[in-house]
Length: 368
Image (cartoon, rainbow, N blue to C red):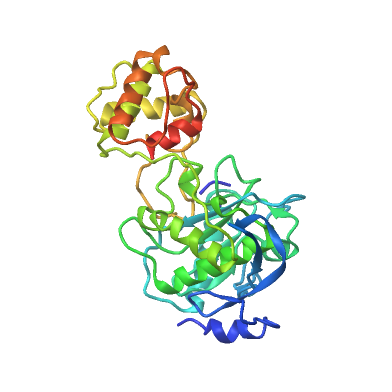
């Protein structure tokens, strides 16, 4: 990340609802979302306008409640809403089986200490932290109050080069191979639904850290559930769901058509020594790392993973693909044409016709 036993929710949230009524919506944790009276912008189904529901504010523990240190400088509050809600995983200290509130508070203190003392930042990088026990806590100071206002944004430090437009949620744990606990999942749905209520975020703008930077975060398993998250939040808010167009993440050791296409595209950028074998080996990694260095793309990892030793150098993700996917006609460059042929043969979904100039959207659909 860049400058970054559970209470019964049915009981906690019952008092926050005035009139749920027959048209209310329920979350899996038991929270009821009351319908709003005004139609949502752009949310409709055939023949009728859809009324956007409102998610109540869940129980979120404040920085004061978990014992945060004062920030070392000013907290920047921007006079605009964040566009994206971004999901992270902390990775370390790992998948603890301590689901207590005190453990959740300690995680927040540890993250803040590392961000301030280890990174030299003003405060915790993310705006919110979500524990494996399902406890939700404020991260950076003022985040909770500003989201309540619904018109401003506390600028955090959790997504490189995008912190003015994203609000980040750190989910305790490492989710590269295992799934999240149900309590964490339920609280994540509640928290995202409430933030989306406050800011009116589009469902396709609920994304993962890797959709902005070349990093594993939020882990292959949790990232693979983000469409499920979008669907759950959309259902809770009585909105149609949506799926964003995103760049894939390729890592050393990967293989297949996407890797082969990337190798052709790297060769088109002057890395003639890259083999075209469909295997993300050492030569491909070196080329990606050199491309990132040449173009000033910083190495990005989730900084809450302060004990993790995995080296993400050479990962080919959302901040690298734009450097190797030119807006050209396929026939203008032999290697680009081969990349396109490779992806078409693998079932890429973009309908690119002869004479078309390839756009970023075309490449994303081809790589899907």
